[in-house]
Image 1: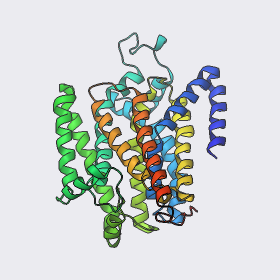
Image 2: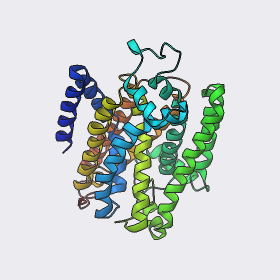
Image 3: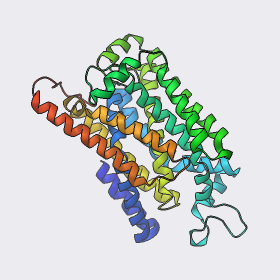
Length: 362
């Protein structure tokens, strides 16, 4: 399905803007795919705990949210709120940039790209803190299987201190605001970061509230993120779905902002990042669940969480210093690649110990 969607997207791009639009859409698609491996792995760890109904909702409605919501409407909403423009005016501004790719129009008003770039500190602070909380929840939780044992085991022991992830995240937010953030943005970055922490605690906590009996089992099996809700249905399934959508949004922030280094056209961004990139994430997620890949290659989840931690730090650092997209992509690929190699080595040395039946995605 992702191949069909990608092909159609490229055709639409060509009809919309010729060879230039086609090339830009392809570049954005490759960029999003490069940044999406860790997202897909984490999605799979959560999706396999959901009922068939909620899996279908994530793979259908969730795609629309990812494509239309995050890759098309989200940048428009940011411009709308930041510049006080109407949604129609924001969309018109996006489709009609200044001549020659300038940052400002002749009358001195900022371009769509400039307005969105100005909002990067708030976006990066929210997304960075949400992803950081996810990583710290994994890092400080006791796990039956550890990958980087020399650091994961000691930190798991320290993690017995109540609310340690919140404390660490709060300290890092203060450090970011004080030493990385431009002075005029410090208040906004602090507020946005706190909202990121609150959002994580709220969505994750609601999942635990509706399935408290699974918490001990979840910790014993070494999973991080939201409490394991085996075949979660009803309210539990809904909150896992919401968790996945917020998580996907947090992953999307850097890609959406980074796309403006390539083009400011919202249609091309939606085609490249959304229809090609988001569909790839869904397809890879489905593959991981159907094949039982996470049970077979046990360190993949670890590598994905470390990649999330790296992405969170990069997002926070990018508030004060621009970070090339290639750096973000390569860090994630290296960590997941290393986890995969370690998993293969473990599997060969213990051929019958880690095998589990593959999960069926309905």
